[in-house]
Length: 104
Image 1 (cartoon, rainbow, N blue to C red):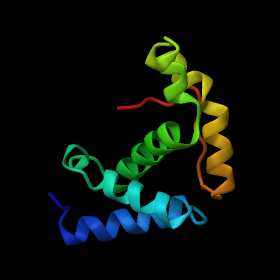
Image 2 (cartoon, helix red, strand yellow):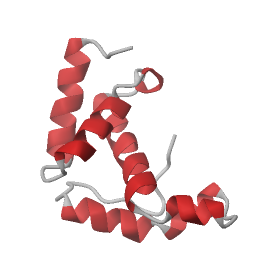
Image 3 (spheres, rainbow, N blue to C red):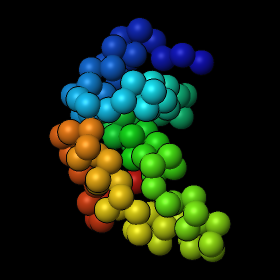
Image 4 (spheres, helix red, strand yellow):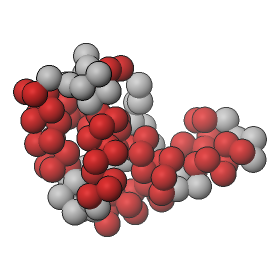
């Protein structure tokens, strides 16, 4: 199910504000994830942030490898914070991931 037009616009605006230099393919995946049904109750900015962190974690870090090696989710997430922030910095993100950030 696609997000209503106003929500799609709000997600696109939040995404552009958060990640000015993210590659198009990454932005499209993050945009789709932020607009997913399970994110609809979240404000657009929070949905975009959570979708961004999940996308980077799964596609641009060693997160999946750590899980495959037997690390639990929280440990694997902790060990990829620096890799995640490197990607966010490369994309000129207006926010970085903090070890104390709460996630859904």
